[in-house]
Image 1 (tube, one colour):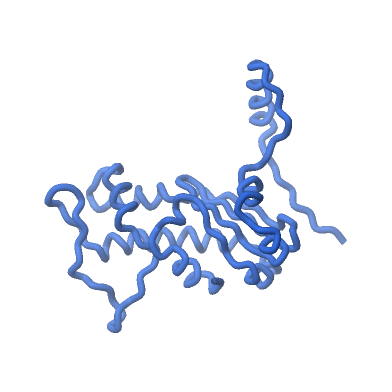
Image 2 (image 1 turned 135 degrees about the horizontal axis):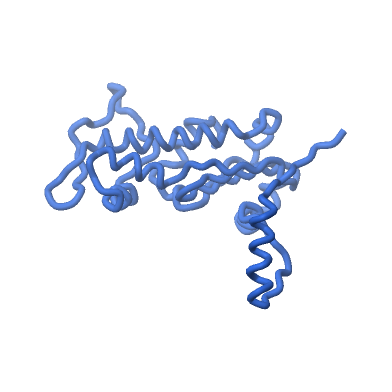
Length: 193
C-alpha cells in the first residue's frame, strides 16, 4: 500500500524560468514551492508531527497545506482571497481603493449576534468625507465572502485527515489573517480551534 502526493506544475513555466536565469548567468541551486517554504518557516516540528493545517490567506489566492506525521499530506491553492472581499465591498458604491482602505480599517470576519440574534443596525462607518455605509451591511459582505473562502478551504481537507489535524490545529498566515475575528470565523466554520 502506498500514499503519494503528486505536485504538478506547467513544465513550460519551469523551463522559461530556468532560461531567464541561464541568460542572466545566474545558477539555480534548488527550486522550492512557496507553500512548502512558508511551512518550513512558520510551523514547528511538533505541529507537523501532530497534524495541522497551514492556511495562507493571500490577496488573490488562499493556499492550504496539510501536515501529519512530518509529511505534507495535501496541498491546495484556491483562487479566492482578500481581493475578492475588496471587490465585493465595491457593491456598496465605493471605488476599489476606498473599499480596500475600509476593509483594512473595519472588516470583521465573524461577529457574534446580540441577545436578539441580530447585530446593531444603527452603526455606520465613514467612507471618505461625509459618506457613510451601514456597518452591518458592510460586515455581512465581509463575513459572507470569508465564510465562502473558509468552507472552500476546509472542504479540501481529506476526510481521513480531518480528525488528525485537530491536534495541531489551524495555523493562519498571510494578509487576510489580519482581518478582525478571523480565528473565530475559522472555529465557527470548521469546529477546530
